[in-house]
Image (cartoon, rainbow, N blue to C red; front, side, top):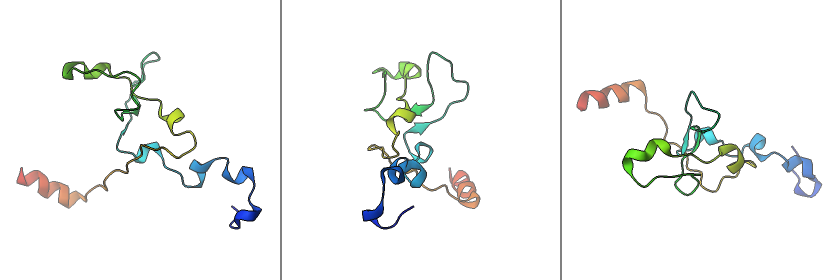
Length: 100
């Protein structure tokens, strides 16, 4: 990677995600589901503004179709990205479970 911006070319900025852009797996809104069916996508971006199909009733939440995270974050600069909270240590999680 070129450090001097006057000597950079278009190929240096072609893939920002490879250069440290945001990753969907690190976002709060990303959920990955196993067993995707070919006609309904269950893995993707569950941000309320980016859903392809949403339901207003709580009992119909299974019918929600998430946004295509590959298209949304194509350049690695998702505007709706929110970092996940760091995972607590095993001891902290065990103590929290004992308190409840």
